[in-house]
Length: 338
Image (tube, rainbow, N blue to C red; front, side, top):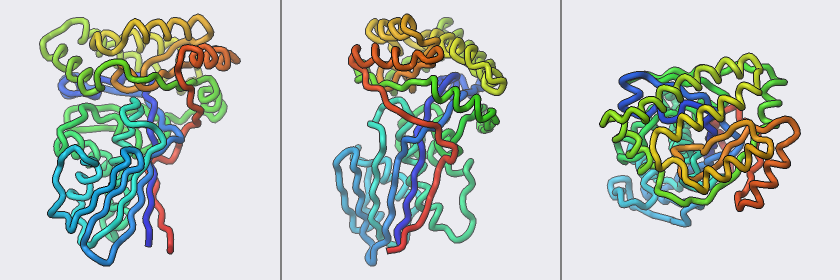
């Protein structure tokens, strides 16, 4: 028997950064995000011996171990190793992983990969299957505590639950609130959004989040004001989406981007700012860099029937637009009989 899983990546509309401690634990955070039809895929095939074989299409790496006791962290497919070590399989297996988007793209691909991997093992359980909240929390704990990477926990909950959500965070708790939008409003939102890949030009996201966190801890007023405003924008955006006020949604994207840039000077650059203003001049109501910032994907919400104009200027600026639709299923697992 072969088990497969897929877990979607996400686009964060507002509130990103407020899910990062210590701000999250002290003041509470919230985000508005949506999953899209780009996935981390995982496959598990049981073996007749105790050996573990891991294959990653994204990193072009293959590793083999005689048993789980041999597995050690060394920056080679540690994400896959962490789940295997945690779930402690009693039999050998072949694991294959690939993702539709590049690593460090700002779309939460690592969380989607964790979710897809955990989903494989959860599917194998005959009793006491993990809930969506438990899968998401395990993905977060493995990334943050086992591997000592990552900071916030919005990505894990977004990918497991799927759909468009308003997610609240506190000290030790998370609540996922699905946004029950009218179908017409949801389709209209999808139509007017553009995602375009911007090649990395600055430090990795972990460096940006470290800088943001250190500034907040040291009492940097600008950073604190940015985080507070980002949270306010997320709350306002929640109601704009529920009410179908998409013009206000676009305006709030712009306000959220201004707030986000206050977190750390590493989030934007002259190059990014120039592209943003160019898109705004050609029909984008608002936008933002997905993820921590610095690079990844630019997200824009456009005026009616101006998407093609914005797309054209982005392509001429060297960005690569990516088509997508919303995913409403979250983590999925299934079986394939040989």
